[in-house]
Length: 221
Ligand SMILES: [Zn+2]
Image 1 (tube, protein in one colour):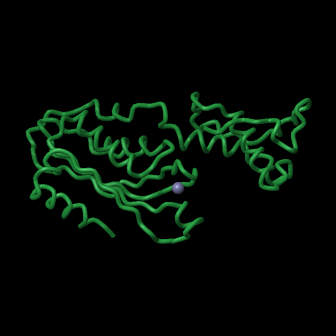
Image 2 (tube, rainbow, N blue to C red; image 1 turned 45 degrees about the horizontal axis):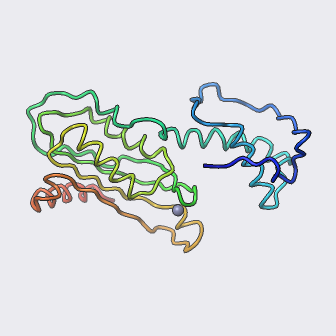
Image 3 (cartoon, rainbow, N blue to C red; image 1 turned 90 degrees about the vertical axis):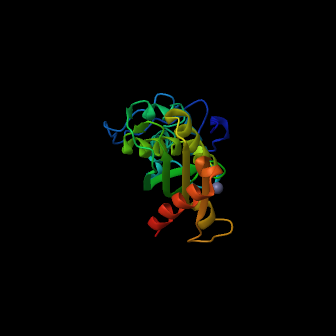
């Protein structure tokens, strides 16, 4: 995580810490108790100073606090169990494919701390238990709220659904655009990264696999 180092801040005298300017606080913003907001604020000031900015100029005064709240929101899934959304299940005599397509998400690439955004498609083959469809979206949302790589996001979601629903098959396909590829480095806007995780029948039975991929691809674009 981000380390806090007051001494490295060129604009902060260790003996007299500058007073925090009051700023607008959104009282409705969820507070993430696991996050050390002041440590993030200090770190952001250090980064701003390190790139040659003046963290005390007017336009940047509230930036550290804003970034702290943003990180708290972006990483809210770090300490939670996304599988809890799959606890309430319904007994249902249905054993065909259940598919939820186009679940949008925004996550944070753990290599650059830049966002990657896209869509997840989730399919499963129930074994007597189904879950509310919106719960699948909640699982994606929560797994995405961590420093992440797309590959891990994809198989974490697949594993959760396989385990918690005892599904006979699970297919998760994720497509997303990575800011670290479009804004910096190789700079390839429009490039799409695709990952998939197949479990159970979707992994072992080519017919089930092509059926589910056909349904997922029909939604693409
Ligand atoms: Zn990256």
